[in-house]
Length: 70
Image (tube, rainbow, N blue to C red; front, side, top):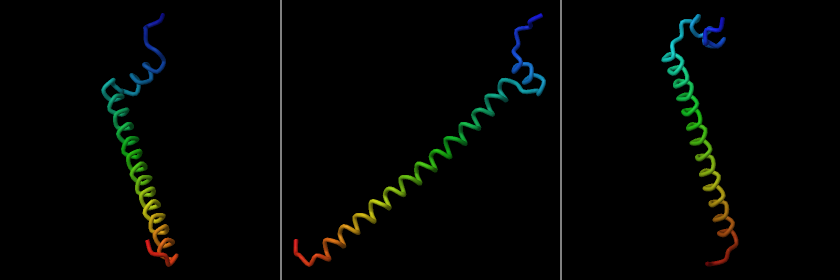
């Protein structure tokens, strides 16, 4: 007879997991993913700002090398 439980439900019960444990596990995975995403975005932002700063200094040095006065 059908007892209303899916195979996954039966496996979770057999493993002793409760709904709260599953939610905590999911929450922990999401926290970790968000933290890694934030680190990656900060790193990308730093890279963009460094590239921007180096290109500005390169442009300034090219202007200075021309010998012309502004």
